[in-house]
Image 1 (tube, rainbow, N blue to C red):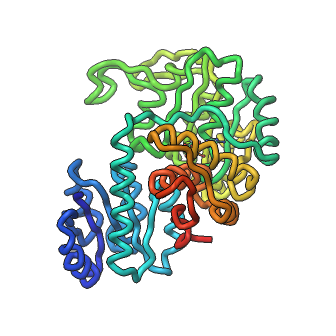
Image 2: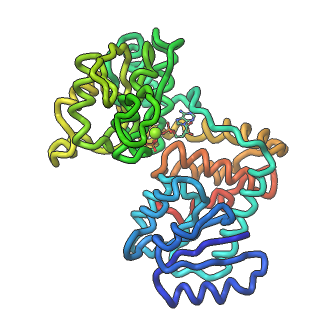
Length: 380
Ligand SMILES: Nc1ncnc2c1ncn2[C@@H]1O[C@H](COP(=O)(O)OP(=O)(O)OP(=O)(O)O)[C@@H](O)[C@H]1O
Ligand SMILES: [Mg+2]
C-alpha cells in the first residue's frame, strides 16, 4: 500500500516516517506541504493522510483539490476539530485526533486497506441519486411542497447542508414533472474552472476564442425542453450572474462569438449549501438573480432533524451493502442503533451511507457493534 503523508511539522513527520518504517507492507512518502504533494501525487498512491493546519494550503483545501481521487485520513489537533466537520462533508471517512499512537494510525490504515480491497472486488456502479429512503415527517413536509412545485415551471431553489439530498431532490423534481421525458442537465458551478463556466452554460461558435476549434452547444441548449440543474449556485462568479439572469428572463441564450439568439424552454432548479442572503449582503450574489431562482424555496432539513429516518436508511443500506459484497445478512446491535441516533451527522445522509458501508465491510460478525461504526472519536 502506497501512502502519502502530508505534515508540516518536521518532528511529527520524521517520527511518523520512523515509526511506519517497521511496517514493510506500507510504502510511506512524506510531504511537508500540500502544494508539493499535489505535484507528486499520481495513481500509484492508495491513500493520503494529511494534517489540517498547514502553511501555503491547508488540509481542507487540499482535500478539495484532490476532488475525491484518493481516500483520505485527516490528522488533527483539538483546535481544528470543527474544521474536521468540513472534511467529513468532503467525503473523508476517518480522522485521527492528535496526539495518537502509531497503533491507532496503523489500525486506521488497515481499515482503509480492507475497505479498498472489498470495494475492488465488486464492479463499480455509479451511485445513483434515485429514490428516497426513509420517511420522516420533516422530509414528508418538503416532499409535499416538491410534489406541488413539480407540476409547474416555477424555479426551485434547494437549500440545505451538504449531504442532505439536494441532488436527489433535483432528480425527483425532474422525474415527476411534465418535462420528465426531456433532458435533465446538471451543471456544478464549484466543479468547473471559473473561466469556463460561461462557455459551458452558453456554448460557443467556432473561432470565438483561441481554443474554439469547433462550435459547441451550451448546457442551456442541451437542456432544451427539460430541466437545468444549477448546482452550487453560490459559487457562480459575480460577473456572470447578470448574464444568467438575462438568459432566464428573456428565455434565450447567445453562444459566445455568435450574434444569433436561441430560444430556450427550460425549468431551472438550483441548489446551494451556502447562506445566499449573507452573500447578497456581502455583495457576492445578486439579489435580482436570487429572487429569480427562488420562486419556490425548498429547505431540506439536516439529518439531525430527521432522526426517525436514520435507522430506516441504515437498515436498508445494510441490506444493499451485504448484497453488494456478497456477505451474509447483517444487522445493528442495540447499542449501535443508540449511537447512530445520538450522533450529530455533520455530513448528513452522505455520511450515514459511508458509515454504514464501512461498518458492513469491517464488522467481524453478523451483528454490527458500536465500535465498528467508528463514530466514537468524532464530533458529537
Ligand atoms: N432520502 C435519501 N434516501 C437515500 N439516499 C439519499 C437520500 N438523500 C440523499 N441520499 C444520498 O446521499 C448522498 C448525498 O446526497 P446529495 O448528493 O443529493 O446531497 P447534496 O445535498 O446535494 O450535498 P452537497 O451539498 O454536498 O452537494 C447521495 O449519495 C444520495 O444518493
Ligand atoms: Mg449536491
